[in-house]
Each structure stands twice: as C-alpha cells, then as structure tokens.
Length: 378
Image (cartoon, rainbow, N blue to C red; front, top):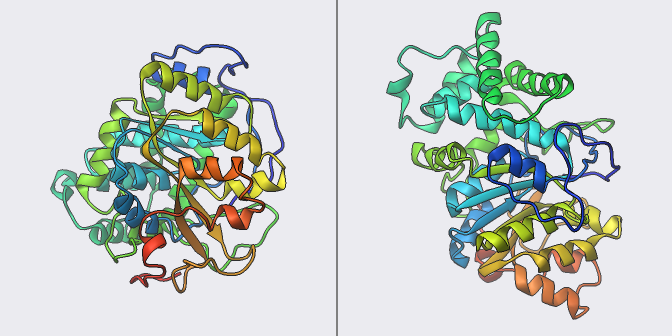
C-alpha cells in the first residue's frame, strides 16, 4: 500500500533528463540512464502487504501473458510474476531510490545462491548448512521451517552481510557510504525478523492484515496452487537466470512523472521490445489523489505494448469497501486489466474515478468467474 510522494535528491546514479536518448549497455548504466530523482513513501516497503498478490497469476494464465518485458513496482512480489511470465527483461520502477538498494540485495543473493535454501539462509543471516546442495528441490514448507527453526548468530549474520556486500561491489553501481548503510540496515531487518518480517510503515500502526514474509511465500493462486517464486526450485531458478543475465533492472521513477517511463519507452523501442505486463500495485490510487493519473496514462500510451498486454494492480477495501471480485477473507484484491483498453477508456472519458479504473476492462479469471475461495486466508 502506497503513500503520497515528496521529491528528494537522488543519491547514487546520474538522472536522465527530458529529451535525452539513453544508450544503456550494462546493468549499472541502465540504472543510471533510465532513472530520475527519487521520492518518499512513509514505509521501507521491505515486503508486500498484498496477501492477494498471487491471485493475479490465474488471470495472467487465462489472458495468455508470456514473455516480452515486465514492468513493476516494489520489492520481491515482482519475482513471482516474473517466474510465471518468464519475460526477456524486467524493469522495476519505483519512486523510492531505496527500492533500488533493496533490489541490489536480492540480485546479490541470486548471484551467491545455489538454491532457495541458500538464498533464504543468506537473506535472513543464518549459517549455510554443509549439505546445502541436498536441499535443491526440497518442499517450500521444509525450507521455510528450516529458517524458522534456525537462529541467526553474530558470526552467521556477519558472513551473510559480507557476502551480499562483496557481490554488490561486482555490479559497478556507484554507492556512497549512505547507500551502503541503508543496504546493511535493510538486510539486518531480514536477519532480525527472519521470515516473520512484516510490512511496516512510519507513523501508522501495523494493520491486522499485514502478512509475514513466510505467509507471502506460502500464498496460493485462485485455484489454490502454490505459485510464488519460492514455491519450487524451477520457479526460483527462472528468476535467478534472469538476474544473472542482468535482466532484472531496478530504476527510480514516478509512474506519473516526466522522465523515467519515457526513457524506458525510448529504450524499448530502440531494442524492439514490447511490454507484456505492468504491475502497479495500488499506485494509481495515489496518482488520482495527486492529480497525475493522466500523466501515467500518457506514459503507458508511450510504451510499446505487446498484444496482449495487461496492468496488474491491487485494491484495498478500506478505500470504498470490498471489490466486486474480492476473494473472501482477503483485505486486498488483485486484478488484471487490459492495458490498451485502459488507455482507450481514459481517452474516451469512461474513467471518472479510481473506482472505475479498478473495476472496468478486467481480463482473466476475475472477469469470467468472480470470487473463487482459496486455501490460505488473510
């Protein structure tokens, strides 16, 4: 769940300027040339608060979304969509420069890990077991149970922090001391709380529906199937392969801004790539509040869109009550919307409110079946 935006200086990469033509040819250069000055949210947003996030997987399958370019906001919930869609390239656009720093941690973990257990062990600062290779292909529950029952020690935490720091150094992304301090702070949050880490905000009390990291990993789609990127070794490996190829690029950008998405559109046009999916979380709610939703539509219109292409979004019932397609016992609702139809609907004046934006032109299972209860509830 997002908050309003106030712009602050961007620290560690040179921002693009309107009218420039970036020519990124490395991971670090892509971050630098596609980014703009960063903004602020009242949360570190280390994990998602959208328990319903995997319900969109059913809709993506029904809509036939595969390959292409994936765009998204926020932390590692993106990886589950990437594992399903298997895009050629993923660009993660978030107004907070801290989101780039967190994704550098994830990239380091993928580079350093042989399987899901080692990935989670390093993320949570546990000691890597001597038989780590034997855990390849283990069930998700057994992997998470191992983390839950294994305490981090001062030595294991220091080893994990050092491993991540040394991997990040190989990415050649310029990072001042302040950014390195933030990276360590984020990593220590995972080490301290393990897979019990919850979404947190500043100045607002925690909500009862905020899931833990472990609960998010164990979530299911509308058919009750475990489909997070941690659910199987194969799904995790799909994300790892893209990360190792420098195909997951985090950048700083405002979805309703003037620079980053235009730079992304120019880059994709030059490379002959098309966007198949754009995960926006509930950012559109705040764009409406800031009166910049029209600029987001302009940015969406400028992107080369595949056929089909969709926008994945979340709706929280505190705004107006439950969404028509809300799954029982979930506070959030995940929906998938036809991207060209969203642009056309706005241009035709059919969307006069945020409510209309999240209830029209939906695709996939929510458009045909409505509510389908699933096993896990939040």
